[in-house]
Image 1 (cartoon, one colour):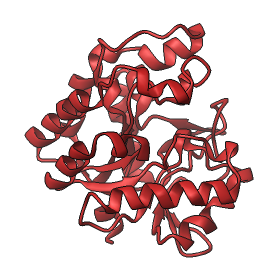
Image 2 (tube, helix red, strand yellow; image 1 turned 60 degrees about the vertical axis):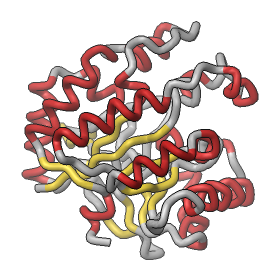
Image 3 (cartoon, rainbow, N blue to C red; image 1 turned 45 degrees about the vertical axis):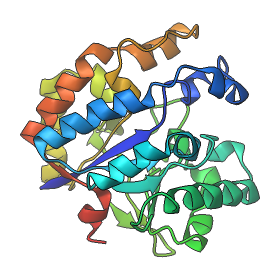
Length: 272
């Protein structure tokens, strides 16, 4: 079974975890590390012969256009991660539409492929922000990958939504981040901090169980997760743990995962 490998293309200082410590207006003052980290990731993917979907933040595309062109030239899918990394919960429908349009203009000016996918920053598609789906449809988006069908995270989650890839009411595909049902809970395992926290043996067991019971796993990673030397930000102990835990092990763990399971782009998984 081919699973979906996705990359949220953003730099270390763009993350919502640091939003109170690093203001958006100060992003331009931060040390850019996205190019070197993405090149490291691209190298791993190339060695394993794997193509991925890159959800590109418009802010990054505007400042690193050559990087986006290089990703596309290597055969990876380009999708949008929005413009400014504002959460859907922080935007009105009009502001979201304006930011989505700008992000699509940026990407479509850099690559020849059609941009048909979207992922909300910090998986902020919730019951209160489902209005965003209609905006996506209006701008030609064919699939969304923002739903996290769990209730265990304090900042996001769309509890009760399907665990498998499914159609939304207006025809757009929803490609949810994978959670394994265990009793009453849906346990996230498919990337990010969950991937860094779990021992590899458990991640492998969860992958196998999800493939057997539900379908393709939708896995995600950020380039900064391959960068243990990135700057340290003074935030709460919880936020430090979420961001920095096991960064030294991420590259090797990802390489091992790519050797054990088949992966491809979201577009190919959907047959679009």
